[in-house]
Length: 353
Image (cartoon, rainbow, N blue to C red):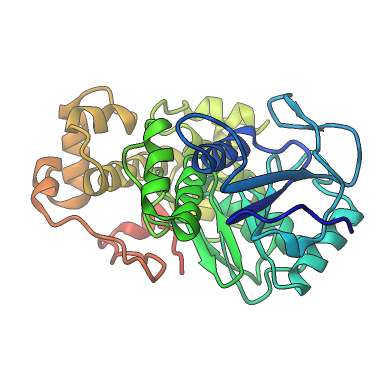
C-alpha cells in the first residue's frame, strides 16, 4: 500500500459505502476542514482527510450526489482514524470484498475504526465489532437487532467509544463526534472555533440522549406489526390513521387490529397514543420546549386534549412533570432506562443496555 507525506496532528481516512448518508460525511469533513486552518480557509495543515475506494468510479450518496475518491487504499497506519460512512441498509451490498479486507488489515494494525450512521452495521458484518458495543440510531434499532442479535447495541446516545472502535448514531451526532475527536487531538479552542463557524453553539457528550427517544420495542415476532411500529415511530407528530397504516402494510384495518391485539395486547390506536405520550414525557424531561410545542410535536391538536391524556397515563399533568428533576446522563456509562410506570408494558417500552 502506498504511503502519505508527513502526517499532520490529525489524519483521517474515509470509506464511503454505496448509498452513504451525505450529511454524516459532510458534517464530519467540514469539522476537519475548519479545524485544520485559520478562519474559514481549507488548507489541510492540522488535519488531513483522504477519501479512499477500491474503484475509480464515484460513490453515490443516498441523495444522488456522487463523490470521487482521492486515492485507492493507503497504508492504514498513516491514519489516526478510518471512518466508514454508512447509509441505506436494504439496497444491496454497501462495500466490496477488497474494502472488507482493508478494514480487517486496519484492525490488525490497531487503527481506530469509526462507523458513522449505519457504518456500525458494516463493521459488524466484517466481524470487527465482536465483544464491542455498537451505537446506532433509534430509527435503525430494530434492523440492527434483527441482523445482529448477539451484538451489544446502544440506541439511546449520540456516539460511543469502545477502545479503538467508535460508532455514531449519525445525523447531528456526527458533528458532536467530530468535535470530540478534534478536541482530543488539537484542543478545546480549535474544536470550539469549528463549532462556532458552523453555528453549533453547544457541544453534546456522546452519552447524551438522541433527540428522538426510542419509543417501543419488546421483541415482536410478526413482521407486519414490526413494520407498523416503525411507521408509528416515524409519524409521531403527524399520526397516520389506522386505515392508512393498514394500507401501507397491504392488509385490512381489521386484520391489523387482530395482529396488534395478538402481538402487543392492545389495539393499534391505543399503542400509538401511548407511544406519543411517552415521547411527550421524554421531551418534557429533556428539552425546554413549551408544553404547547410538545403537544404539537407529539401529534395532539391542542394542549387541553394532550394534558388530559397525559394525566390519565402518568397520574400528573405536563406542568407537574416540569417541576420534577430532569434525569442527567452519565458520561462514562450507557444511559439506563428509568423505572416504568405501572402500565408502561402497554407502551411496549424499549429496554437498552
